[in-house]
Length: 305
Image (cartoon, rainbow, N blue to C red; front, side, top):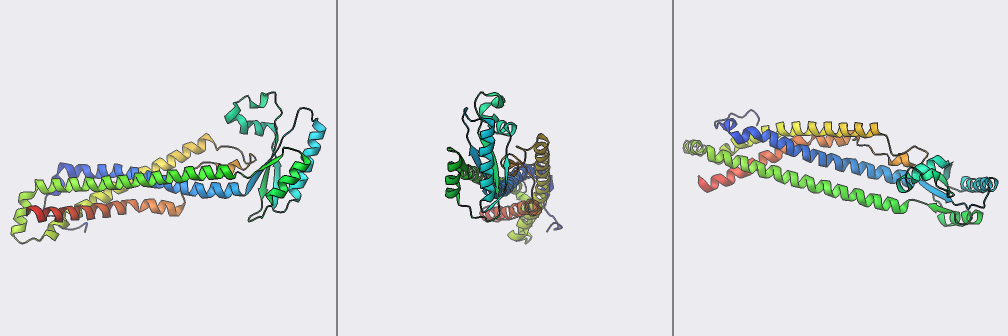
């Protein structure tokens, strides 16, 4: 198809010369949308698996509880958690880590507030563990009234709803870009038909069928679509890699000890099979361009030839 002999001077058309750049920009937007959807899909699975394997125990204290009594209560809570079936490990967060978690809401002076901060214990669960949360809550209340277990269920649901919204937005943007790509091909093809109408009529008179003339346009659209698709995909890949590098340079959201917040670290890295999907975009763009050009030519020739 790419080596098909061309009897029409289609490469001289001004609109055709700009077509690879237009398609490249369209594919760039589509590749960013598809890449974003793939990243969001991976983050959704990663965040859900990371948080569902962790929970947090909050132990509040009042001003009248001394340091010794506080330590005894925490030892009892940690012993209870360690003896609970399904618990793989516990980590008691220090005041600095708790203040860092409260900083988004209370500001950088969270550690200097004249209020007793609750003790926070990060609990890691064994894989596929069946934890009796109600019994654990009753045992914790018996040790220290007000102690509670947070499984992050509400946060997980809100986060997953947000990520699903992002994937839907990416899908809509991809659809809009592909539609705009097809309309661009239709416009360029019709422009070429108008410019070369006299030549097309002569070729028709000497016996060339409509399919042959359509083949001239679809070969050009295939070549230009592939070229624009490759350029747009490479630029999008560079954008994704660059954005991920900047994000990693800025640092992750938190340390590993902060209630599993390392599991929520943002990164834009794609898996090999996801890069493979992006690599198919130039081929898909070329096929869409080719089929759109063929349909446009055959439909137009049926009207004025």
